Length: 295
Image 1: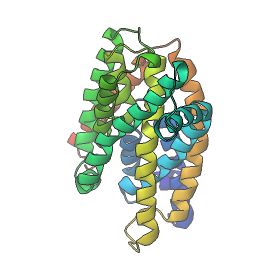
Image 2: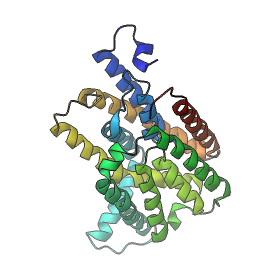
Image 3: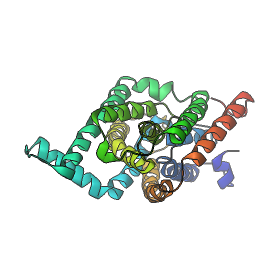
Image 4: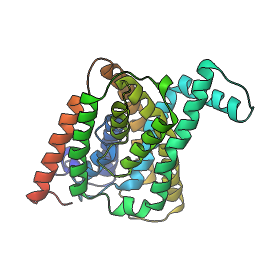
């Protein structure tokens, strides 16, 4: 039974599409920062919408603008400090020491760490949008990268803070983030796993995953938004208005999730999310194998 049919007792028209966009906005906000892959959940939920339509990479990228705006506001002091130090060192040629120097270095590492996902995302955009959204691949990625995150969180040392972030580590973080171009991997999950393998605390790994995602996600989101504004393609599942509503909802829900998650990881492990990923991936594989849903 489709989402629209569950919520409406009439045929699924414009109101039904708006309700489905609202639901997907909530899903985006809930799952973007948890290490469970928001793109996978948007794709999976699409199978239960009227017509079983994939909302598409464009819808996912645009709604991520909302969740990244939540990061921008929540970490506004950190981001302002990084930008101020980076600008002072790079443009004004100031000699920085102590905390300011560390913040400027983090600014450069975020730039460097963004390069892999930007290059691969641009060169492989057609493959990402058309060939990597198979539910077989997504379900497998949920399980495999869930296990990887579990190993990293269980065996990684918890000794490093972001003050110890090196150029080598920044590049490795960036390479991990690029894996998230594949739905089901999870941007936060991949970067957190890399951070834990490198010995960073859960809080440090999570905080850096928030900051590192900003340039790439905003870039991808506004690129897709520009394409949506200039395109007359009627094949998109949702209109711009419906996508805008979903983006606004993703912002509100995402902000609440950030506050909760930072508090959660200060005392708990990522194991609940790992178990959830494996169970969800297994269920999707069973549904695919039995023909209950299509890939």
